Image 1 (cartoon, chains in turn yellow, red):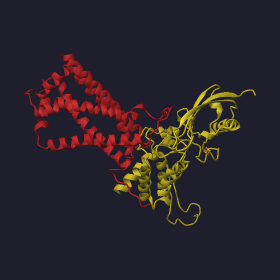
Image 2 (cartoon, rainbow over the protein chains, first blue to last red):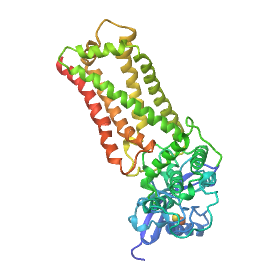
Image 3 (tube, rainbow over the protein chains, first blue to last red):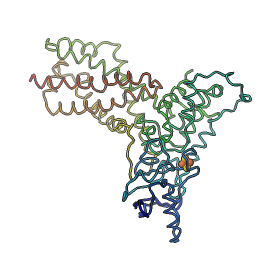
Image 4 (cartoon, rainbow over the protein chains, first blue to last red):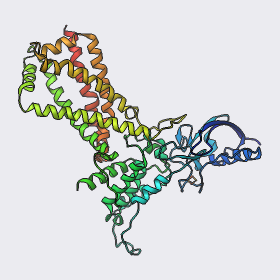
Length: 250
Length: 217
Ligand code: FES
């Protein structure tokens, strides 16, 4: 096959949450530059299974950058070297022939490893369950333009809503902080009329759960913003801080 | 949605304490520098000593001193608590990690620069404040400053500490606005501009003082 690549991989293998993990080296040839990173791992797994080895466990679902399931720390970056891209949308052409690539799971205490590269992100679900919803009755879908929302506000809420909850912010933060995730969720609902009734209770409850899960605090290093595949801005963290002050003082 | 947080123990609450105490300490830095600039006066330290005397004897300054010390200790203590908690959140480190382009080195080493500043402050407070207040030698504050700064080793230590302070504030000052929810695209440039005063201009002015005395001697 012409135009294929050979790459060396260093992959974190860990049998289960209680076992010690370690890096295992693999060399994979016949990698097409058009493959996604996950397809490359599929190819490697095919080889491993053929040899009777255990396939590498990694998370994936939509493979089109919208579900937030894929979660790989590739060569020292969450979701790899490209900006605004999930691991499933990262293509092998981003790497060069013969490159060695280190693949690690998200590393944070609240994200324990289940197996190999798969981590348990249910801490995010519990934060959402604590307050990331609207429980008051907001009625049926209103007629267009009966609730007026400024275009800029709607856009900003939409930017926050783009968060797919993948956890790259936690993975990239030196403190393993979930502030960008929580900020996106709080911000989205704080900007919209439907979120107003529970505005104060929401920020309190979500932050309480965030702390209870053991995520670190925000040091404002803004590493999360650079790694977020949806490029959520840290200005949402400023809004979260405002919302918190408002809940406490107003 | 019943859960509540406490301003004192929640991570965001603790960051607020860091921001507020940080601003308070910045305001003191400005006052301190203002008085220190009288050291450059060509009056043999007369004006400077008047201020030093006022600070040492005026009764209202006592409670302010206590508030100032409390502010320092609070900032250092809460900063350490956060640092420990933040490190606990990632017990297993990455084998390979590259910081994203938006995060600055100053922001990642703020605890370390802060720790150096703390060590400096212990020495600094001992050299001037403790000596003049509790073990007076009869020398005026101006003479104490002059004599201390004639020692090039002390000067080197002093200037290095200011370097750490500047780097600490390079992150800290602007970061406090973010923590207080005041940073957004509209004010970003203004905050960064004012930040330069605190992280660059003020430490440089402080550093000029030992150099001045070294040059005079
Ligand atoms: S698998 Fe759905 S975002 Fe990557």
